[in-house]
Image 1: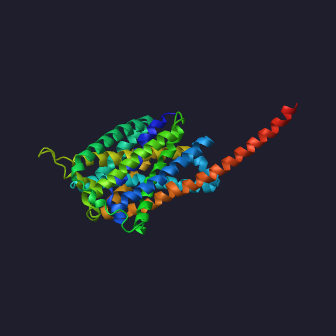
Image 2 (image 1 turned 180 degrees about the horizontal axis):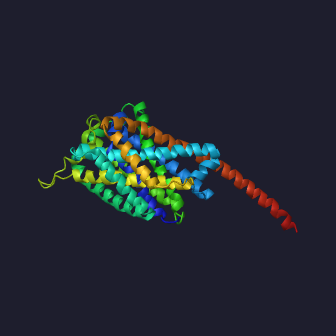
Image 3 (image 1 turned 60 degrees about the vertical axis):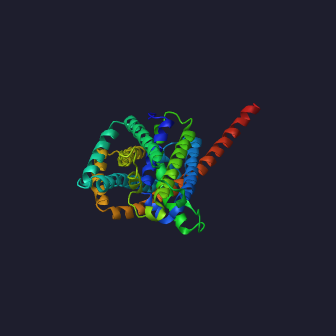
Length: 374
């Protein structure tokens, strides 16, 4: 399709993995405590290595079709089976995005407005954006991520004086515990959503600096998330932070400038609403791309997904505590279908591709020898 360049991937990657860890940091602090930021660094290193590996395989094979790689690695039927799970996990991530946005807005800002209204607006607006094509998706993503990043930097500046580094110490008081390892696994599951960018690779005009721009985006996101997690712990301490539903929202409520400016919640509202909304859009278009790459001819597929979103996201958002419990299970599903299985598939594909390339090179060399002797 050739409609975007590698610089757009910076914004796509940011939209996929920032908002989850910023909205629900308490879900990770619950197990990692004050050392959660260390678990995040470890998980970030692993996800960076994963992204580098799959992008190297894409470039060396010059194949950017996710479905084709699954089929060549595992065979037609097994490849289709695991491709289906990739698509299903992508669909669950869609439901998560719409439900999380609606829950935060309903509980934290507009209690009298039902969650289904937010879900319906998000789902219907996304259909309009997606049907305009990839250019509309990327323009919306760029604008929203610029606003979110600016808001985050300003928020970090305004909340700096309320943070106390004493809450971070002692570091690794009990060493590497099971809680820290579990936290790293959960964070790795959240970060594995970066795999949703893979369907976008087939639409790149040029792949020249694909790895460079993708790694820069990951480094930008990683430092933002690490400092955000440290900021939450420094503001409340691990014991209090774990009992807050939305720590970032509570953190902004302490902001006061010149004795009368107290509108810190607006920054979080922008980050939450815009962040989950753009994540939903990016995931929605990625699902459309996977369906296209799979060769499935489905009429009105955008409207079907819109209807499913309204139904299932509403069911998920009816009870926040149930949603958080389901979210915990979803992290493991994402870890399996967005990281572990794709990594195995790509490694199998790389080995087979190298073997085929070696055989082809040997055959060419054998064919050239008689000609050179003549």
